[in-house]
Image 1: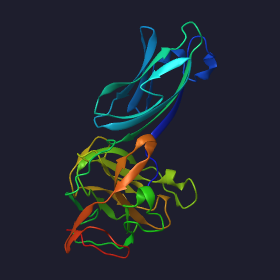
Image 2: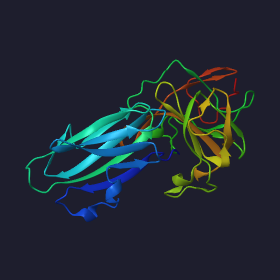
Image 3: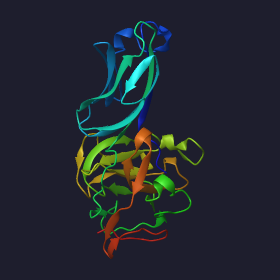
Image 4: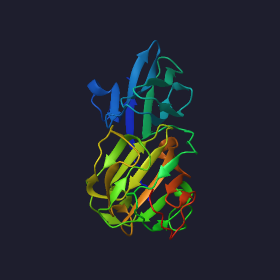
Length: 286
């Protein structure tokens, strides 16, 4: 099961007349706050007001959501907003101006980000490679719409039953935007998703190919690395929210506030095109 891979940060700031204890960030650092050195928020004073800027430091697009809670401030275009930032792009998210000059103002804001493009248009005619070695086949534990856990946002994910340490190959090329490989725990209780090891690859259509439950130290690629289809990228495992060793693969499109939706994709196999992997099926990689 796919856990959240975004990074959420609660940010608090206050106007000069509000209670300064609202902010846990030193005043000298209060103008710009960053998370993972990827997305930063910057408060910039303007004539009579403040602009809230979003800065993408990464070499790939990200989707950002922000929510503002204010007192005595007019917020344009609105208190809640989601936008996609292209690589290295800075945009103005919000403009804040006092409603009643001279009276106290305060601002609290939350933001969240995910790799990829909001409303990305998937390249439906692309044929994905099965994510294991050519000539190999592995039984599908869960296919599209499997009732155990592939419903809702994970409807179009596929779970391949694999022994721990099975080589994993890129189903499609792109840029590595997020990895985790330090965990060794797998369990099914609530909260186990945080122990998953994974690789996230951003495709050229703004979607992400995501590979979960890898073994500890089972990631062979680095963030920002460009990978080719069929490249050996890691080793399968049994980490995170899982009951048995397997590889969870899906293509996702980001939605606001770290929500996501899986997308149906087609795979090449030696017996033809696989449009809907079925539970119990075995498909030989081309």
